[in-house]
Length: 399
Image 1: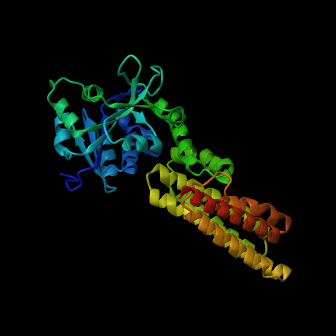
Image 2: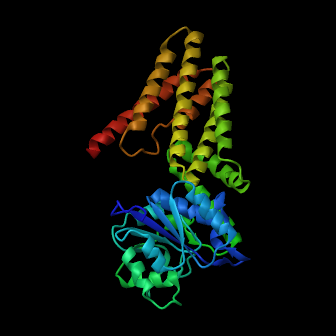
């Protein structure tokens, strides 16, 4: 039995039974979403939430469903198909917690992470029966919003019911009767794209909102107002055209090398402009990696942006050292890079105004365009040290 040596393991259960309302014969779970199928996207969310095993509850098998399950299983996660609550209960460890996702559910990481953090039985609910997230009424006030945290024992209770029961509805009723906590669906989760979709057209329109929400993870001012906006504009187009995730990364890497070369040739304004485009490419690649659940790759690309800033600053300091015949620009560059490295490692929560690698590039660019990159390096160093001081103070307050 998978995970039998982990008494508190987290498992997932996804329903993939209903057909799309505008594509007869096609399961909603196999409709395209986020550069993959909706089912693969749901499995990716469960894996990110910590699930070690995912079961797919099906009514009938289709080639597209089998292909999606095989692709998801090839990533190292245990993904199996079940046809009943009894079969699901048999395949799961008795003490496992089970996160249930409704058929056709579109959601994001913060929602699933919140439900995964629930220690006991819980139901995500909305008090708006007209909400796109409302699936089935639980009582006079709340409707189920597509996610539940249950126990394997509750699956066993459903298995004792008559054979003609509706698996998803029966599970919901058992969870509700057990006194499960009602977790309200927030307005921000709705804005992030949380909803249940039954059509290919509706899923396609929901796709853009969810992709936009994924870009919000980079919250400092430079990313929020510049690079996140670029990624938000590019990501839906790249995904809809099935552009490989390495494409923006490769472009960002080539432009990054080009920017360093231009700076070392003395073309600092052109080099900084190219570095900004390189940063946009790496940020978009990080968002695509996040979408596909490749968190290590996303973090690596964030570090690549830090590396780009460091190389740009040091190259600018080196060139300015020779241009004004002073070591001050190089010292400023070294100080800025060192301070930013410490900021990145600070345990305190980062504030929106704090310095970031992308913010430094934006700050340095206008000085380089004007031919005063050494003043820009001074501004960058001051910004980095001011942020470091705030980070140290925040750590002290937290302690």
